[in-house]
Amino acid sequence: MNLYTYIFQMDVSIIINDDILDVSDWRYNKPAWHSLENIGRNMAILDATFVESSVWYLLINHLKSHKFFADILKQVLMSYTITNLTQCLELTKYDVKELEKYAYSARGYGFTSPILRTALYLANIDDKDAHDFSQKISNELSYFMRCEVRFLFENIFISPLRKN
Image 1 (tube, rainbow, N blue to C red):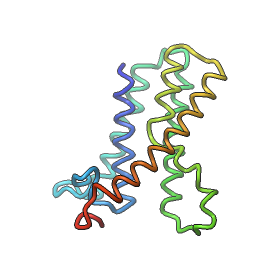
Image 2 (cartoon, rainbow, N blue to C red):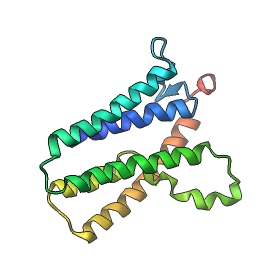
Image 3 (cartoon, rainbow, N blue to C red):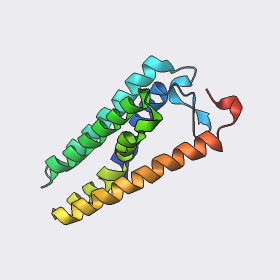
Image 4 (cartoon, rainbow, N blue to C red):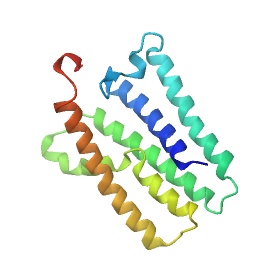
């Protein structure tokens, strides 16, 4: 199985939900999935659920006999969970003075943690130090990516006409 396939599907389901929750009609300078004429919000929610279920199907179908199958599933589940918690934080009104307690919300950035840790598991590497280091890199990378995406798309790529 191509690891990229499940990571891509995972990211797609997260992006569809993110656009709906953020009430954003544009993503990467193109119409968001839910804003397309023949889709709408309800169908987009179903599509995101369907795409997410395809992640679980791909993992179960291709990796069920792998030695670290349960660990791989746990990584994906934790990533979805943290991403959902991050969405909750984004929807919450918070005081700028308390921003530090939200500093780690970027940890759930869809694909950074599970791709590295899953790759280690697929290579039959169960070394705690390797996984801890992988997690540290993932956290730092996801924070950078979150900041970069927010800056680029809020300040450069989205014209004032396309902001919601």
